[in-house]
Image (tube, rainbow, N blue to C red; front, side, top):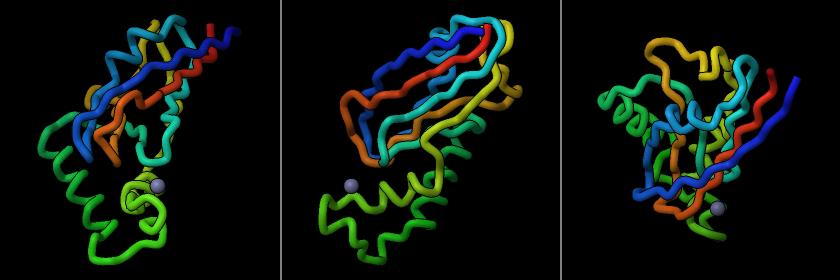
Length: 134
Ligand code: ZN
């Protein structure tokens, strides 16, 4: 059994942005079978798995905006005015742990891995991959 880790940086261009990182992760996987943890080192971002269909991705943004309303004032806004970004991140996850098979992510036909920017634009968002396998 081997453990390997890599990290890579993502620059984002909008306040809310969904970036498909599936092919980037497949490039970085260098073991045949195992599991990979995909972790974003930021509290205003997320890693999720879902379908890369443009209407659905717009629906996802719409849902988050409605769950974390801008009609209220939030205590964290007194510090750095990005409470809604953190609260959306609370609802999602900072990581996913996924299977590796034949040197690639073993995803379902309609699944992709996304980095979700919730407080952009930002330079140099860091995503860490930790692989365990052989
Ligand atoms: Zn903050």
